[in-house]
Image 1 (cartoon, rainbow, N blue to C red):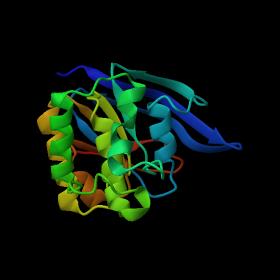
Image 2: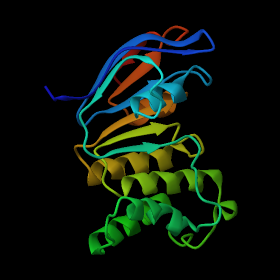
Image 3: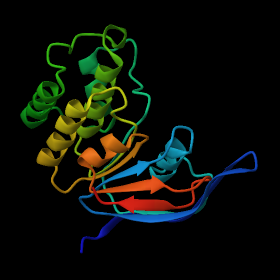
Image 4: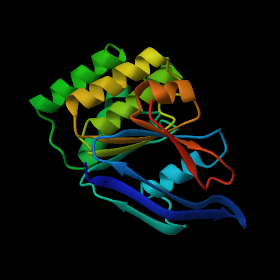
Amino acid sequence: MEAFVLRATGITKKFNRQTIIDNLSFSVEQGETVTLMAPSGSGKTTLISILAGIDRDFSGTVAAQTRHPGVVFQEPGLFWYKTVRENIVYPLGLKKIPWCAKTEARYREWMDVTGLAGFEGHYPHEISRGMKQKSAIIRTLLYNPDLVFMDEPFSSMDQASARAIVDHIHALHPRITLVLASHSLSQATGFSDRVFEVTRTPMSGFEITIP
């Protein structure tokens, strides 16, 4: 049995007295790829923000055993005035991670896997939504996180592109834990070890599916 990397207990979240998440509990084991599946507008983004430690205005507890967490947001959040390459490497400077031959090799591999090779000098307004999402994913994975939260990361990609990205993540980081939010069951079951599907509103329980 693997150790739990993430454990959510009794998570409750309210907006203007309306309960969005009600006493939700679940655990994720090390090395798992788990998808939290629910319809649009049901609170998936809110839950991801809570799990990632961004939203602290909730009741309940979240315990995460991680040294290098990462988050891929639903909106890519690229700087409009930076090129694709500049956007991708920007966090490395913030985290004071030196650029080296190994990092360069990982960067090149990612550019090839995602089809972004040749677009390094383009600006966000010159590339598609899917390419922006790919840039945001590379930006997060480049600094080797061990737990990654991803909010609708593949909503603008086809299944083959999403599969290639997940396969490459696991090839580079076999022990990595991924927690994704999605509204698409077909996409979720394509690369998840378990799918936690919302069974009631407000979000208060999951039906667990093993693909």
